[in-house]
Length: 283
Image 1 (cartoon, helix red, strand yellow):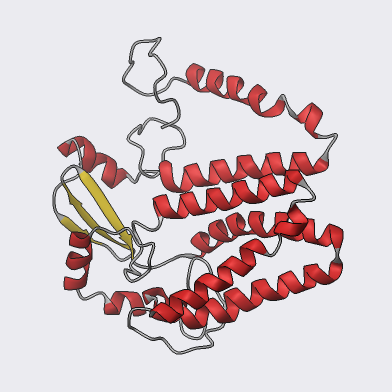
Image 2 (tube, rainbow, N blue to C red):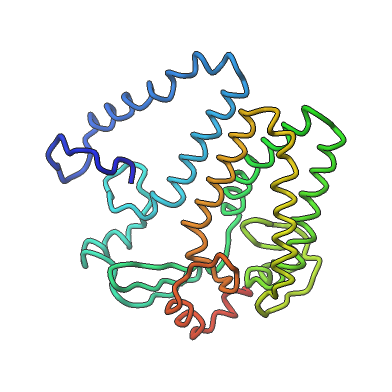
Protein backbone atom coordinates (compact mmCIF):
# COMPACT_ATOMS: atom_id res chain seq x y z
CA UNK A 1 0.00 0.00 0.00
CA UNK A 2 2.82 2.40 0.85
CA UNK A 3 5.69 1.21 -1.36
CA UNK A 4 4.31 -0.53 -4.48
CA UNK A 5 6.94 -1.59 -6.98
CA UNK A 6 9.90 -1.01 -4.65
CA UNK A 7 12.49 -3.84 -4.93
CA UNK A 8 12.84 -6.16 -1.94
CA UNK A 9 16.34 -5.54 -0.59
CA UNK A 10 16.03 -7.75 2.48
CA UNK A 11 14.64 -11.20 3.20
CA UNK A 12 11.31 -11.67 4.94
CA UNK A 13 11.56 -12.25 8.69
CA UNK A 14 8.24 -13.54 10.05
CA UNK A 15 7.67 -12.89 13.72
CA UNK A 16 7.23 -10.06 16.18
CA UNK A 17 9.25 -6.85 16.04
CA UNK A 18 12.04 -6.64 18.59
CA UNK A 19 12.39 -3.55 20.83
CA UNK A 20 15.52 -2.60 18.87
CA UNK A 21 13.63 -2.71 15.55
CA UNK A 22 10.84 -0.57 16.97
CA UNK A 23 13.33 1.95 18.34
CA UNK A 24 15.22 2.17 15.04
CA UNK A 25 11.98 2.65 13.10
CA UNK A 26 10.89 5.49 15.39
CA UNK A 27 14.38 7.00 15.30
CA UNK A 28 14.34 6.96 11.51
CA UNK A 29 10.83 8.40 11.29
CA UNK A 30 11.24 11.34 13.66
CA UNK A 31 13.90 13.18 11.59
CA UNK A 32 11.64 12.95 8.55
CA UNK A 33 8.85 14.70 10.48
CA UNK A 34 11.00 17.23 12.31
CA UNK A 35 13.53 18.14 9.61
CA UNK A 36 11.26 20.63 7.74
CA UNK A 37 10.05 22.33 10.94
CA UNK A 38 13.04 24.71 11.02
CA UNK A 39 11.87 26.26 7.74
CA UNK A 40 8.14 25.85 8.39
CA UNK A 41 8.11 27.93 11.58
CA UNK A 42 8.96 30.95 9.44
CA UNK A 43 5.52 30.68 7.84
CA UNK A 44 2.78 29.76 10.31
CA UNK A 45 0.31 29.03 7.51
CA UNK A 46 2.63 26.41 6.01
CA UNK A 47 3.37 24.99 9.45
CA UNK A 48 -0.34 24.64 10.16
CA UNK A 49 -0.95 22.95 6.81
CA UNK A 50 1.96 20.58 7.49
CA UNK A 51 0.60 19.58 10.90
CA UNK A 52 -2.96 19.14 9.61
CA UNK A 53 -1.72 17.01 6.68
CA UNK A 54 0.12 14.61 8.99
CA UNK A 55 -2.84 14.56 11.39
CA UNK A 56 -5.15 13.56 8.53
CA UNK A 57 -2.69 10.88 7.43
CA UNK A 58 -2.41 9.28 10.86
CA UNK A 59 -6.13 9.52 11.63
CA UNK A 60 -7.08 7.98 8.28
CA UNK A 61 -4.49 5.20 8.56
CA UNK A 62 -5.55 4.40 12.12
CA UNK A 63 -9.24 4.49 11.26
CA UNK A 64 -9.28 2.54 8.01
CA UNK A 65 -5.98 0.67 7.52
CA UNK A 66 -4.85 -0.36 10.99
CA UNK A 67 -8.12 -2.22 11.64
CA UNK A 68 -7.77 -4.23 8.42
CA UNK A 69 -4.04 -4.90 8.29
CA UNK A 70 -2.80 -8.50 8.60
CA UNK A 71 0.55 -7.35 10.01
CA UNK A 72 -0.68 -8.27 13.48
CA UNK A 73 2.75 -7.68 15.06
CA UNK A 74 2.71 -3.99 14.12
CA UNK A 75 2.55 -1.86 17.30
CA UNK A 76 -0.31 0.24 15.92
CA UNK A 77 -2.37 -2.70 14.61
CA UNK A 78 -6.00 -2.43 15.77
CA UNK A 79 -7.47 -5.71 14.51
CA UNK A 80 -9.47 -7.36 17.30
CA UNK A 81 -8.10 -10.47 18.98
CA UNK A 82 -11.03 -12.60 17.80
CA UNK A 83 -10.50 -11.64 14.16
CA UNK A 84 -6.77 -12.33 14.44
CA UNK A 85 -7.39 -15.81 15.82
CA UNK A 86 -10.04 -16.55 13.19
CA UNK A 87 -7.74 -15.34 10.41
CA UNK A 88 -4.81 -17.44 11.57
CA UNK A 89 -7.04 -20.47 12.06
CA UNK A 90 -8.65 -20.34 8.61
CA UNK A 91 -5.97 -18.42 6.71
CA UNK A 92 -8.55 -15.82 5.70
CA UNK A 93 -12.15 -14.91 6.38
CA UNK A 94 -14.81 -17.62 6.10
CA UNK A 95 -17.28 -17.50 3.27
CA UNK A 96 -20.39 -16.85 5.32
CA UNK A 97 -22.48 -14.07 6.78
CA UNK A 98 -22.00 -12.65 10.27
CA UNK A 99 -24.20 -10.12 12.00
CA UNK A 100 -23.14 -7.89 14.89
CA UNK A 101 -24.73 -4.95 16.64
CA UNK A 102 -22.53 -2.46 14.86
CA UNK A 103 -21.99 -3.90 11.41
CA UNK A 104 -23.27 -6.38 8.88
CA UNK A 105 -20.53 -8.64 7.51
CA UNK A 106 -20.73 -10.40 4.17
CA UNK A 107 -17.75 -12.49 3.13
CA UNK A 108 -16.97 -14.64 0.14
CA UNK A 109 -14.67 -15.09 -2.82
CA UNK A 110 -11.70 -14.15 -0.66
CA UNK A 111 -13.10 -10.71 0.09
CA UNK A 112 -15.05 -9.40 3.06
CA UNK A 113 -17.59 -6.59 2.93
CA UNK A 114 -18.91 -4.88 6.05
CA UNK A 115 -21.89 -2.55 6.07
CA UNK A 116 -21.93 0.23 8.64
CA UNK A 117 -25.29 -0.19 10.35
CA UNK A 118 -24.92 2.83 12.61
CA UNK A 119 -22.50 5.68 13.19
CA UNK A 120 -20.65 6.63 16.34
CA UNK A 121 -19.55 9.99 17.68
CA UNK A 122 -15.93 9.28 16.71
CA UNK A 123 -17.09 8.96 13.09
CA UNK A 124 -18.56 12.44 13.34
CA UNK A 125 -15.33 13.84 14.82
CA UNK A 126 -13.18 12.38 12.05
CA UNK A 127 -15.33 13.46 9.11
CA UNK A 128 -15.93 16.94 10.45
CA UNK A 129 -12.20 17.39 10.95
CA UNK A 130 -11.74 16.49 7.28
CA UNK A 131 -14.58 18.83 6.28
CA UNK A 132 -13.17 21.70 8.34
CA UNK A 133 -9.89 21.57 6.40
CA UNK A 134 -11.93 22.40 3.30
CA UNK A 135 -14.08 25.08 4.90
CA UNK A 136 -11.18 26.69 6.77
CA UNK A 137 -9.04 27.23 3.68
CA UNK A 138 -12.06 28.65 1.83
CA UNK A 139 -13.13 30.82 4.76
CA UNK A 140 -9.61 32.14 5.29
CA UNK A 141 -9.29 33.22 1.65
CA UNK A 142 -12.70 34.92 1.75
CA UNK A 143 -12.06 36.53 5.13
CA UNK A 144 -8.79 38.08 3.97
CA UNK A 145 -10.70 39.90 1.22
CA UNK A 146 -14.04 40.67 2.84
CA UNK A 147 -15.73 40.07 6.19
CA UNK A 148 -19.15 40.50 4.60
CA UNK A 149 -18.58 37.79 2.02
CA UNK A 150 -17.22 35.52 4.77
CA UNK A 151 -20.46 35.91 6.72
CA UNK A 152 -22.39 35.14 3.53
CA UNK A 153 -20.31 31.98 3.01
CA UNK A 154 -20.90 30.85 6.60
CA UNK A 155 -24.65 31.38 6.12
CA UNK A 156 -24.61 29.37 2.88
CA UNK A 157 -22.73 26.51 4.59
CA UNK A 158 -25.17 26.35 7.53
CA UNK A 159 -28.20 26.67 5.26
CA UNK A 160 -26.98 23.93 2.95
CA UNK A 161 -26.01 21.37 5.59
CA UNK A 162 -28.72 22.22 8.11
CA UNK A 163 -31.74 22.78 5.86
CA UNK A 164 -31.26 22.06 2.16
CA UNK A 165 -29.30 18.80 2.36
CA UNK A 166 -31.33 17.52 5.30
CA UNK A 167 -34.67 18.20 3.58
CA UNK A 168 -33.92 16.88 0.09
CA UNK A 169 -31.27 14.20 0.67
CA UNK A 170 -30.94 13.13 4.30
CA UNK A 171 -34.65 12.47 4.89
CA UNK A 172 -34.39 9.49 2.52
CA UNK A 173 -31.37 8.04 4.35
CA UNK A 174 -31.71 5.09 6.81
CA UNK A 175 -29.32 6.85 9.20
CA UNK A 176 -31.74 9.79 9.43
CA UNK A 177 -34.01 7.88 11.84
CA UNK A 178 -31.16 7.28 14.32
CA UNK A 179 -31.54 9.09 17.62
CA UNK A 180 -34.67 10.70 19.04
CA UNK A 181 -34.81 14.41 18.27
CA UNK A 182 -31.29 14.88 16.93
CA UNK A 183 -29.39 13.25 14.09
CA UNK A 184 -26.86 10.50 14.75
CA UNK A 185 -25.03 10.70 11.43
CA UNK A 186 -21.28 10.80 10.86
CA UNK A 187 -21.69 14.17 9.12
CA UNK A 188 -24.42 15.81 11.25
CA UNK A 189 -24.21 14.41 14.76
CA UNK A 190 -26.49 16.23 17.20
CA UNK A 191 -28.06 18.46 14.54
CA UNK A 192 -31.82 19.03 15.15
CA UNK A 193 -34.09 16.96 12.93
CA UNK A 194 -36.25 19.57 11.18
CA UNK A 195 -38.07 17.23 8.79
CA UNK A 196 -39.86 13.91 8.89
CA UNK A 197 -38.18 10.80 7.43
CA UNK A 198 -39.20 9.86 3.90
CA UNK A 199 -38.33 6.15 3.52
CA UNK A 200 -38.22 6.00 -0.26
CA UNK A 201 -35.50 6.68 -2.86
CA UNK A 202 -34.74 10.37 -3.53
CA UNK A 203 -36.21 11.72 -6.76
CA UNK A 204 -34.39 13.54 -9.52
CA UNK A 205 -35.54 16.86 -8.08
CA UNK A 206 -34.09 15.97 -4.66
CA UNK A 207 -30.75 15.01 -6.22
CA UNK A 208 -30.73 18.16 -8.38
CA UNK A 209 -31.39 20.52 -5.44
CA UNK A 210 -28.76 18.81 -3.28
CA UNK A 211 -26.20 18.91 -6.10
CA UNK A 212 -26.93 22.58 -6.75
CA UNK A 213 -26.33 23.38 -3.09
CA UNK A 214 -23.00 21.56 -3.11
CA UNK A 215 -21.91 23.29 -6.31
CA UNK A 216 -22.66 26.73 -4.86
CA UNK A 217 -20.79 25.84 -1.67
CA UNK A 218 -17.75 24.56 -3.61
CA UNK A 219 -17.51 27.24 -6.31
CA UNK A 220 -18.42 30.28 -4.18
CA UNK A 221 -14.88 30.67 -2.67
CA UNK A 222 -12.99 30.20 -5.96
CA UNK A 223 -12.71 33.92 -6.93
CA UNK A 224 -11.11 34.60 -3.54
CA UNK A 225 -8.94 31.48 -3.60
CA UNK A 226 -7.52 32.37 -7.03
CA UNK A 227 -5.85 35.38 -5.40
CA UNK A 228 -3.97 33.10 -2.96
CA UNK A 229 -2.50 30.09 -4.85
CA UNK A 230 -1.40 28.30 -1.67
CA UNK A 231 -4.91 28.32 -0.20
CA UNK A 232 -6.33 27.32 -3.59
CA UNK A 233 -4.01 24.30 -3.67
CA UNK A 234 -4.91 23.41 -0.08
CA UNK A 235 -8.61 23.72 -0.91
CA UNK A 236 -8.42 21.48 -3.99
CA UNK A 237 -6.25 18.87 -2.24
CA UNK A 238 -8.61 18.83 0.77
CA UNK A 239 -11.63 18.26 -1.46
CA UNK A 240 -9.78 15.47 -3.31
CA UNK A 241 -8.79 13.78 -0.03
CA UNK A 242 -12.37 14.04 1.24
CA UNK A 243 -13.93 12.58 -1.91
CA UNK A 244 -11.36 9.81 -2.37
CA UNK A 245 -11.49 8.76 1.28
CA UNK A 246 -15.26 8.67 1.53
CA UNK A 247 -15.57 6.91 -1.83
CA UNK A 248 -12.95 4.31 -0.95
CA UNK A 249 -13.88 3.57 2.66
CA UNK A 250 -17.49 4.64 3.24
CA UNK A 251 -19.48 4.42 -0.01
CA UNK A 252 -18.83 0.67 -0.16
CA UNK A 253 -20.18 0.18 3.37
CA UNK A 254 -23.12 2.61 3.50
CA UNK A 255 -26.68 1.29 3.87
CA UNK A 256 -28.10 4.31 2.02
CA UNK A 257 -28.38 2.19 -1.11
CA UNK A 258 -30.33 4.83 -3.07
CA UNK A 259 -27.47 7.34 -2.85
CA UNK A 260 -25.97 7.94 -6.33
CA UNK A 261 -22.47 7.25 -4.95
CA UNK A 262 -23.29 4.02 -3.11
CA UNK A 263 -20.87 1.23 -4.05
CA UNK A 264 -22.26 -1.71 -2.07
CA UNK A 265 -22.44 -4.82 -4.33
CA UNK A 266 -25.94 -5.86 -5.39
CA UNK A 267 -25.67 -9.31 -3.77
CA UNK A 268 -24.73 -7.76 -0.43
CA UNK A 269 -27.68 -5.36 -0.65
CA UNK A 270 -30.05 -8.27 -1.23
CA UNK A 271 -28.60 -10.21 1.69
CA UNK A 272 -28.86 -7.18 3.94
CA UNK A 273 -32.47 -6.53 2.94
CA UNK A 274 -33.38 -10.11 3.83
CA UNK A 275 -32.45 -9.48 7.44
CA UNK A 276 -34.67 -7.64 9.87
CA UNK A 277 -32.43 -4.69 10.76
CA UNK A 278 -35.20 -2.25 11.61
CA UNK A 279 -34.87 -2.89 15.34
CA UNK A 280 -31.09 -2.51 15.16
CA UNK A 281 -31.20 0.75 13.22
CA UNK A 282 -33.87 2.38 15.38
CA UNK A 283 -32.23 1.32 18.63
